[in-house]
Length: 425
Ligand SMILES: Cc1cc2nc3c(=O)[nH]c(=O)nc-3n(C[C@H](O)[C@H](O)[C@H](O)COP(=O)(O)OP(=O)(O)OC[C@H]3O[C@@H](n4cnc5c(N)ncnc54)[C@H](O)[C@@H]3O)c2cc1C
Image (tube, rainbow, N blue to C red; front, side, top):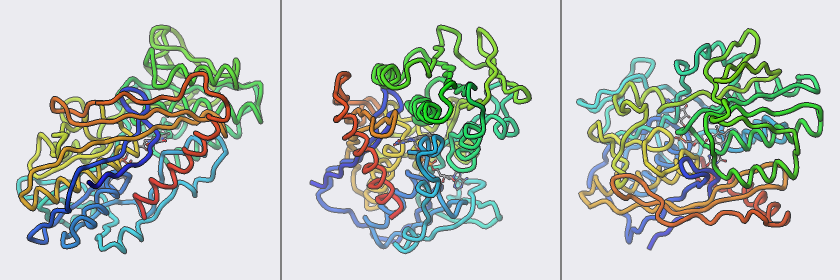
């Protein structure tokens, strides 16, 4: 039995599981023809899928379409914001993927014609496919929060797609006065990486405690409860007592509008003027998924969890943050595991074999300070046409000693090295 296990850091729905694909597959299926598989999006899901396709069947013609020559990863980007890490540690090129025999096309997909199995790129050129994998991640919605558009995001960064936005938020925090407030507006579920706003609040508080100790972090939350809440709140009390304030949905924390001119976040119960306003708006599947017609009215893409096949388009699969997978988390570890499971399903399908049941297992880490992290683990499998958690996650004990937190912080770092190596080579 081929059992692949990996470690992740986040969970989307129940609070913090990152996933690994574990598939029973006695032998790797072989296709009879050199079928063409196009993968759109070279992030955690798409890059892992493209590599696995080629590993499972070297004869496949695999093309990876990704506009950026360098990928900037979100996991650990909160450490960049807190000045604990260089952005370079988040960046990965596609050379090793290309060296594995995958055709890497540095362009954006602009259109998909599912009837004739063709993708049109931004420069007008086209790619034909037998199977298409959509892995475009998320689109930050600029139509969901009054006043928050792309121009506003240059004043009030979301930093929910890593890169320039991450660095902008970092610079703003670095240059604010001591005694200022950093406000973080958090949307309701579903969102990419649900625990990440609270990790971000923690790590920003860590920076402020060292450099601007009279400052505060204010979380304006569109939710009442959040992933790993008791562990976070205990850590905040222990390490940052009084520095982090959270206003929940019931207490009027949901942001309803913003005013970038005054750095104001408007909530149901009042206006909050911040020195630094980190506005994380609602999200949906990456735009190409909407353009292709793979997304439904939720904004996300419904799939068959056995194969990741789109329920709306033939011969199209959707993986990663863009898909609607029930309990499956919108996390890098989940996306990467889904990429491999989807590659198996495609190779089996092309060979006329029945799909194998994907089993996605993993562990999620949340870092609240250097040397202080906790985790949650679980196992997911298709159930009732969705992914469901079939075994409860082992979470870190609330009263675990500091040595355990320190070990989990080390494990989190090693998880990142492993997943980025597995995904980008
Ligand atoms: C602050 C933060 C911290 C996080 N921490 C963790 C963590 O600790 N652990 C964890 O597991 N997850 C974490 N995540 C979540 C993780 O980053 C995402 O879940 C993961 O990146 C999803 O992978 P994906 O492949 O679906 O999308 P991405 O990794 O975003 O990849 C999508 C790719 O598609 C490309 N693309 C988009 N449109 C097109 C197009 N039209 N044509 C071609 N290419 C296109 C994009 O350029 C991008 O490269 C975090 C997220 C955030 C915001």
